[in-house]
Length: 141
Image (tube, rainbow, N blue to C red; front, top):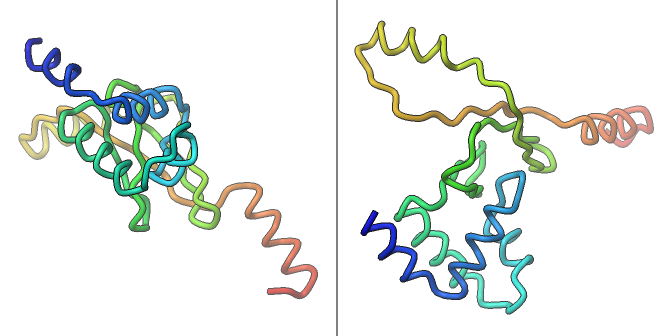
């Protein structure tokens, strides 16, 4: 508890703003998304340093989907389940966790204690699929 109080005291205005943006979002955000939502436009490297600080202290988490871009989300948000479009990179969270049975199986089969999980599907969203079909039908593909 004392450690968390110390971390919260070290939150600069920028770090607090970044944390608030992430916590208020229903989907994970990348650094550019966060930068675009900040009122005072700091340089992007300051946003990355803030993200690193917050993640190192366990206040946020991140995931990368088939690309080098990291997406950040609140550490306390559950469930941590996402769908990610590999065309437009739109990411949404979804509810419904079926990992309990899988966790039990992994625990028993591999003598492994699972403390957390992040689960995601990568695919093509409906909007991108429709756009691809239109381009295909129009002879653009």
